[in-house]
Amino acid sequence: MKEFFNYNIIQIDEFSIKVSAIFETLLFILLVIIMLRVIKKAIYKSRRIDRPRKYAVFRLMKYAIFVFSVIIGLQLIGFDLSILLAGSAALLVGLGLGLQNLFSDFISGIIILVDSSVKVHDIIDVNGLICEVKEINFRTTTVLTRDDKYIILPNSDLTKNQLINWTHTNITSRFEISVGVDYSSDVNIVMNILKDATDQHSGVLKEPAAFVRFVDFGESSLNFTVFFWSAEVFRVEQIKSEIRVKIFDLFKANNITIPFPQRVIHAISKTI
Image (cartoon, rainbow, N blue to C red; front, top):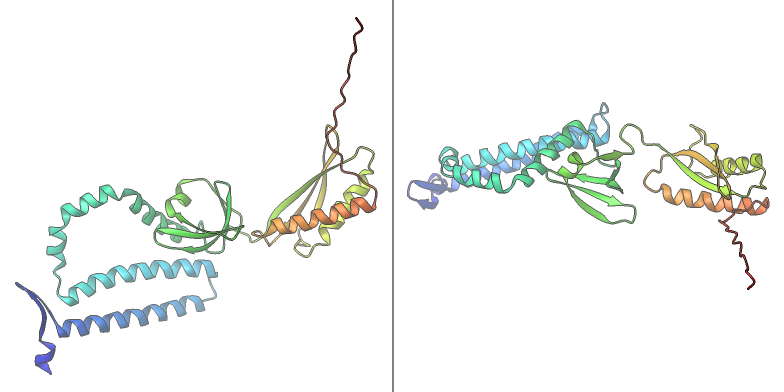
């Protein structure tokens, strides 16, 4: 048995890989997998931090453990890391210059996970693209748009560009619906209709309460805006659509019209 474990599988000059080294490496990998599962279970069982932060903490620990595991695994197999690093120093410098953007994405990924400026399940607006964060990896972040398309964003895009996080500190956000009515309309009735149509929708929060504002005297209409809060930030456009349908039905029932711009053309006839 001793001879079996000391048998050289690979022999290149002074470098060799023995059967015992393979078994030790496999056992080490198994221990790392078990340790990661135990750590994940312990982190997600904690009630002191919310789920997105648990995700970030586990990701950072996973990356750190992975790096140290690779180093230890190479040593178990028999690689001399000092010679390996010294021999590849020039190559590493060349790769560093050529892969600056890649390294920038890696650093950005660490920053995002550490400061939690963007978390899993956050609703963000990146250059006009509203999406939900599904997964934060070391180099990229996977997001889901409102038309159910998955997009892979480089992490540097989230740290370098201006970004709106709709759910950074609160899962609810304020939204608005604007409408113009004819000048002959009763202002109080219009405001009550807008308030009632909004309050009746199940996706609108009761607290804070929705409110209506008489915005302005328009060119051809009286302009109003109803403001409301909702926790359905990602699918709020569907809620707004359903509220608009309700408003339209109530306007129709109360003989309130929505005007369209009109122009009067005066024609001057000249007799010769």
